[in-house]
Length: 494
Image 1: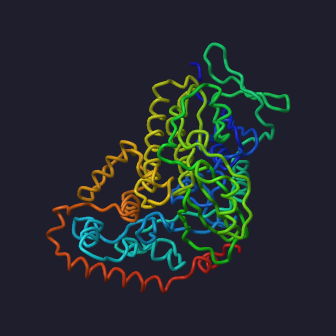
Image 2: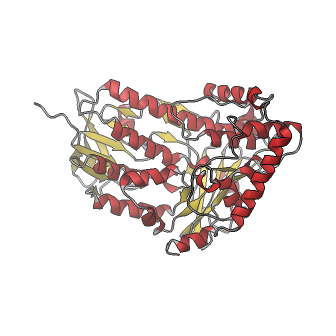
Image 3: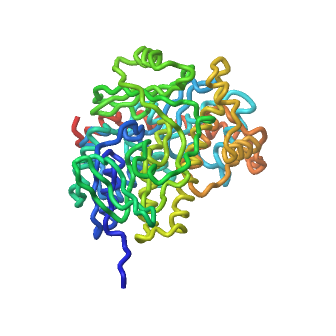
């Protein structure tokens, strides 16, 4: 019988995404030869952002990388992001995990929204264990059962991208990945099938394969050779430049990043023990590159590098024939909410789960592309929400972003939530209901009327219970170690 299994895999691009792809593919398909070629991609935003979502811990578990190994690179724990200046209201925290506690069978946010409509109420995130820890600069691992506030949150990591890439490179080699440093000069296609037959390298050699994984960043050096439509998201996400400024780390890194809005975009601050990072995301139509550099320098002691161009959107068919685009080669988004690396990891898990044979049957690729598009589009919706629900009427960029007709899926989410505080259920969601509610309420989106299921519990009862929640969180937080102290307790090097 003719063996049509994929046995030769070539990954183009030796950045974090490419090395992660090679390591996972070799780990899950040990009988295959996996080769990485070419340098780390230029202008790939997700390769350079330090902050990650909680899903990175699951990806490491799948690979067999222990948390201690990652902490040795200088990484630290992060619990969420403080959003400042995005609306006329006070700043808010989007932290990971449950906010408040259900009252009987009804969601906490419905009761909070009822109180918010009738008068002043403490911030929604004041009832979040993760936000309480983050604001106080403290951290411990989740512990206890579901009834324990310390058992109801999640955490991500803040990485030093350079050190993390070095760790991933060493791990990929350890599991048997072959690395070739030559860059890709050209792509040779099979004249009959249109499949990629081989990559021509700049050292004069070539490499063939059954499957080619494009991790070359926004240029999509392999996938673009097969032709493709790009779905542009700029009408909803107007920022098209990113400035990075990297500096020294801190022995007491904050577990809470900051995202501060300004007239033509937003800037961020994050830190771990090995490095700190500040950045600026902006619209070149509303702010020149030179002025953007001055804005970042005015808010930072760090020196920014050259601006990175950004075209936000996705390829409608990241997997076509025997080439699949992963990471910024498939989806290009700003670092708002730090979802870029997550989308790459999720796509890699899906790639392994749906691995075809060498024929790459279109029906199998169609299913991969459908799920990948659905996930990317919901991340897009989540990011667009921050702009669409903004309240900065004096700034042209923000006015235009808020006035733009949102994607249909986000419009439905907003309409449903504004009615009674309910959320639709979509198949591929990166951000769970707690995250959606935290940002919706943080951005000032309130349901216009109560869900009738909460009528059984009087408002004064829920107000008293919420006050008790806040007291308990304050007492709990005060007794816990700082993020830096906890890392030292774990034996993580400074």
